[in-house]
Length: 245
Image (cartoon, rainbow, N blue to C red; front, side, top):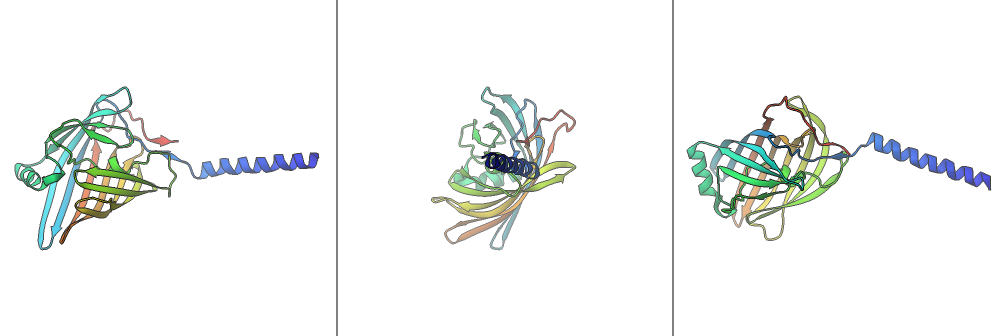
């Protein structure tokens, strides 16, 4: 009888020890965006378009500032677009059914990336990073996969995401997340592509993003290359961040 009890205890010890070792070797990460009043990031956004023999490159800047933190943990974020008049005119002419281009918009943003326009006027076309669509909704390990969905105007997209590794960008540790884009039923135009996003590990905000996107509507097809580079304003301020779960 005692022999079986001892064997059971030893087996339980091995199982618990193995589980603890697994958790130590393969930790989980809770990747969320920091929501503090005054938190501000400045971004340089470049997107080049190719449609047949025609080519166009957009080069602009925008800032994101947390203006208010709500009791539920979400925040009001002000997004201000900085671009020359010619670029703004080109944007407004090409926006079409995707949304209206406003230089200043307000958004209700959650720490998991979800955001809703507070500006009305069909201001759905946003120059925010893809982190609004790719942050995981649960703690994840390196190599783990998850899905999220997005709807911007008539474009409906599924993001198939994976946490690749932790890497330094501009001297700051970042989560490297890759995402494959697929169109959902009813999307117009159809979208496919890939994105790689580097999320600041301490704040959950984007430091860098790059990718390729192709849009197809009937016989028309347009491809684009995206490059985004972000910097926190006042890097020396105190930082609470996305942390190990």
